[in-house]
Image 1 (tube, chains in turn yellow, cyan):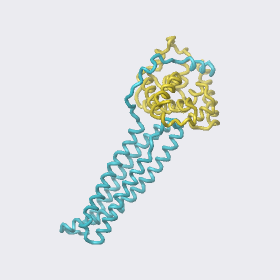
Image 2: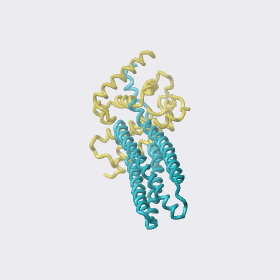
Image 3: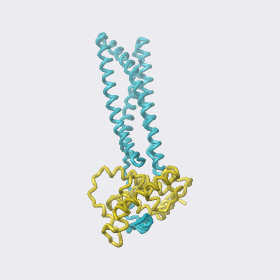
Image 4: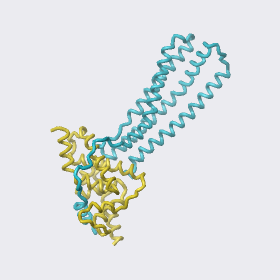
Length: 162
Length: 193
């Protein structure tokens, strides 16, 4: 199978995940599309280095996470001029109030630091601790400890807001 | 709202309505690479100048009459080759983190490369002092051959000015490089906080 075909398959299989990660890490539609484009470019560039030592999905997640983290770090220097709920324009149900579960989730994710946010996204993606550890390059026990702390923090914040 | 609700919110989260509409083919600027180039380019330009200097001394070697001047010529040439070699080695060992590498590992690799870079730069700076001495001796030979009086004033002035220049330029370069390296480090480091 040629590189183009591999790339196309990897993109198609993970398009929804890439879109959600990009949405979670950005604050405007243009920024999100730039990030998706950057993830695609990096996937294409580094496809040759994928030797099948991990699952294709693990590798795609890793690239998507890495690119998102770099991207956020760079764009953070620019002033945000787009409101937080800009993404709500993309929602099919057009919910725009703060009761929208996606708004609540996005708000909670935005309060985490970059690594915790990445861990939480992978947890939300239903990845096992072992897979998260492989994607983020930390130990499984570290994943468990950090995720417990993150979930507890989010739980407390949600309760406080209710 | 509970964690499970957040999971459901994620699962039913936003969906892409424009499949691959924004797939472009133009290269995306790489911040890491551009910051690294701020170190790479001056180092490579400096290396080229050193090598040109070494080539010029080799070409003019026959004009060096005394054994002192010849020794200075050999020392200067050797140092003008060693310095760019170390310089090129120190910048080429920096690799842009691979997108397929886990982020935390990329940070560890960068910190290791940073440490090696600083060590090689320190050796480079140390070698600049013997280069200064050898160059001043060599220059005295060229002045002598042009019937210029090589007085104690020449030696004092040459060494003082050379030392001050070296001190000032090494500080400036070190400050500039550290700023670029800190920028890269902060690009990587925030995630591990």
